[in-house]
Each structure stands twice: as C-alpha cells, then as structure tokens.
Length: 283
Image: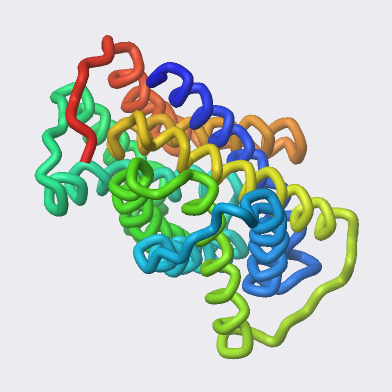
C-alpha cells in the first residue's frame, strides 16, 4: 500500500504543481481571498454531497482546516509578488520542517536518508529564494515561506489524524472549515473583486474539483500509510511539475542559481525515494 500511496501523492503533486500557473493567471482578474473562498466552497460542496451519510464532527479535523487556509492565504497573496515556479519551490520548503515537527510532537524518528534529503532541500530553498548580493528575500518570497510553515504543521497533524478519522469525513471537514475561514477573513483582507475571465473559471472549477476536493481526499487516504516526512518529500515533486507547466505555458526559465537550488531540492526527494522502504511506526 505504501507504493500505491506514493503514486497517489505524486499525482496530487502533479495537480497542485499545474495549479500554480493557472492560479497566477487567474489572480489578474480575481482578488486572492475571494478566489480561495470560492474554490474551497465548491470543493466542500462536492465532498459534502459525496460523503453526506458518513460525516461526523471532529474538532481536530476542523482545526486542520484553519491551519490549511492560513497557509493558502499566505501562499496566494505571495504568488502575486513572485513567479509560479519559484512560489512552488518555496512552498515545498515545508519538507525542511516536517521531520523536526514530527519528532517534536510525536517523537517520530527520521531515517538518515530523509535527513540528508531535508538538508539538500534546505540548501536548495535558500539558493532559490535569496536575491542578489545582499541576500535579501522579497516580500512575496517571505509570505510563501510563512505559508510553507503552515503547510508543515498541516501535514504533520494530518499524518496523526489520517488513521483515526475516516478519509472522506476528514477531507470534508478540513476543506469546509477552510472555506469558512476564507469567507470570514475576506472583508478584513481585501475588497472583493472578480471578472469572470476563462482563467478565473478554470482556476475556481479546476482548483475546486481537482486541486482541492480530489487532492485532499487523496492526501488524507495516502497519509494513513506514509510517515509525514516521506509524504512531504514526495510533495517536493510539486515544484518540478509547476516549473514544467510554467515553461510549457509561459516560457518561464529559471536562473542558474535557482536551477541549482531546484536540483538540490529534487536530489533531496531522490535520496529518500531510491532507498528501499523500511517498516516504521506511524505517528
């Protein structure tokens, strides 16, 4: 089942990677938090209909939704100030925090290969985000790194709950609560604006159905069988897919230093994925 779970998470990473480019195009015609509110509301409606007979309230699952939306708000606002591929690579920086959070909360041991993978990803993220000789970090990059921290907390907590709450129920509750948070935060964060351009429709419908309803259901199921660190490293394929889609769609190219950083992040994934699986206790 671990191999199937790996494939499911990789397919989720593919969907999320492609959504960076779609969302970047859509944000020209829709305000950030309104986009997230509409996307997550659609996903919650779909999951609610699909699992209406089995939904049971869970405060921990609801809390996951709050953490999840905090990450998405930071990421989406940051995306306005940076490129899709760079946003994806920086978001993937949550892989750096996951093993440490997992050990801190659950005392979960991390394999040496995973630690080397985390180290490579950390160096790669630094090369990708630091700008110029002054080594400053842009505002959009800083917001995206903060989003990565929220996603790290989410993936560790989800790893703990995935085997304790039914997948459909857990996926619905976190997505629905994330939608509520977005609607509550909307009047404080921005003046809602939307023009129903094709990119906006694609981002809301595609993002709601594939990148939210399907993706979080798939992630919730898969994390029953994988440690949080392994799941986080597989999700590091997301920025690779984002860069490939950005290159294909817009011709975006990475600078030499950014390419080295991206390569180190990928090397961190491969260090773990090319090692044979060992049976470890799941938190």
